[in-house]
Image (cartoon, rainbow, N blue to C red):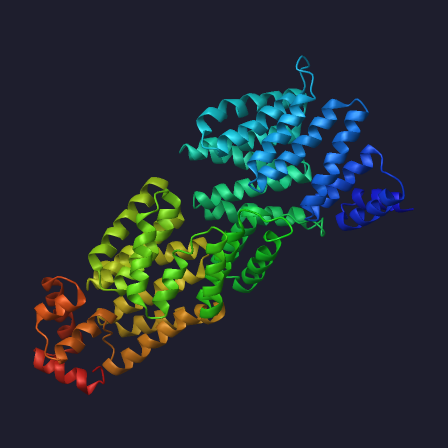
Length: 540
């Protein structure tokens, strides 16, 4: 009998089988309220959001007809919760109001506090975390009184998010951890468990808390293992999971997940995070050197409402279109004020400005990024800021100072488990070692970086590494920076320091410093000897 099969499957958390069997039973004869709720839950948990909304709306009407307003209110709240999670605030608020209207205002029940909690989420995400926080705190206490673990978890989730949003991160994250403990312990119903995880993982991403995001993702995956049909990742948490996979070096799995996210978020219900999914796919394609595919993904992201920066600017840099990359990243930074988004742009801004020889601008970006890291105090941001600062020092010709910054940055990336950034810092360290005459250490760093980059499939980085090795073989063990090669070529063409400075858009004194470094590295005493060296080595 289909009904019994559906009930058995639901009890065993076999959600796809439950959905199929209960759907057959419902077609044969309209399900009773308990079974209808189970069918709606199975539809939601297997990724059928539109169908689950239809089924809960039907359950809402059945509960009203059975004179069970509190149960009817819960159905309305479930529908509204799913809508607000997809970014559809207006219809969500409408369902919250509909659920509240059927309740008896004189009755003290958990549902009244559910309504307050859900409206608190609307208020918080609408930009008023200070005003929403007391509501969550009060409702968490009420949840304990009513013994409602779902309500307690959502209220703690809201209060924790409010604290994080106003900068009171430590106690806020503790409340979020408490909410996730309830999820992984199996104390929270599956719908609100998924919403809790996605909210927590978003908070971790916005706060650059890579370790906490990784730990809770691993915990959730263990929780999901017993429910193979579950679709646990939706909306923004789909994107953040892709980011985590990329950061931790599982680019193959990350690419598959990003492509699946694009497909899932684009229909039949279009989510507001679709643009972020395309952007994440573009990032992975760019890092793998799939230039055409990356450009298409960035354009799809833009059409879906997500700025393609800094990825598209870095793509243009990889294509050698430095001027275009400079214009794009300058515009993006100028129009971005939100701290987290700006921090992500600043690292790319510094990289592009170094490539363009605009070292003062790169220095300013690195300094601002260090300031952000100091305020947020997240290990990820400190590592990002140190990497940018070390790259700027290296470009300025101060290899010794660069090494003192880059060594801790490399260690930090290694501790965070981010192999791509670890390898990129290793290449910078190799350049600094070459500049200081330590060729043996430089070659060891390049060898280690190459192994990691080959494992990742980071084609663009491997091409840059190969170019460094070729340049090193031409010039011997003293490795000139790309800027120093430019200066040497212009010297060989007979340009004066002032003419070189004007052509490259940098100060006269910077040219003098570059020449001093060049003469020392290639062991020549004069411009004439440097010119001869440049022709001998095929640099002109």
